[in-house]
Image 1 (tube, rainbow, N blue to C red):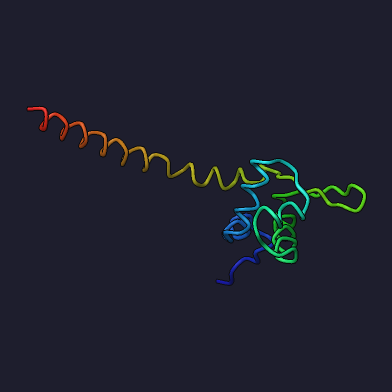
Image 2 (image 1 turned 180 degrees about the vertical axis):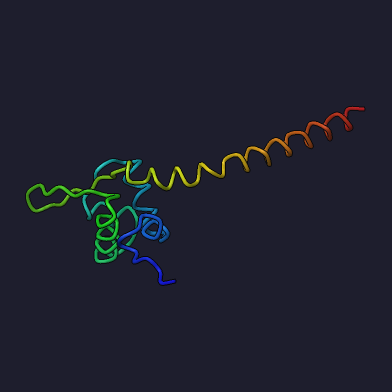
Length: 113
């Protein structure tokens, strides 16, 4: 089965670690220019622009032109599909954490004896 193009699928777009860094930076700092992202992330301007282009195509970031600058902001609601998918695994993590807690409590009781 052919792979879905990166630019049409949020999951594929955010699979790239640098794109996740851009998303995290915009989430923490708010709307930023390409120049600020370049400085913050230590990437070249063409690399940041390319990643922003992919994120724009899937709707994860929006751009607003202010004079000669373009300001990029996060469109977090577009990540909801990822959140919903990951959330379906939450019960597995809770089950594992409960098991770890029970084991730790048992070991603590044994050591206290």
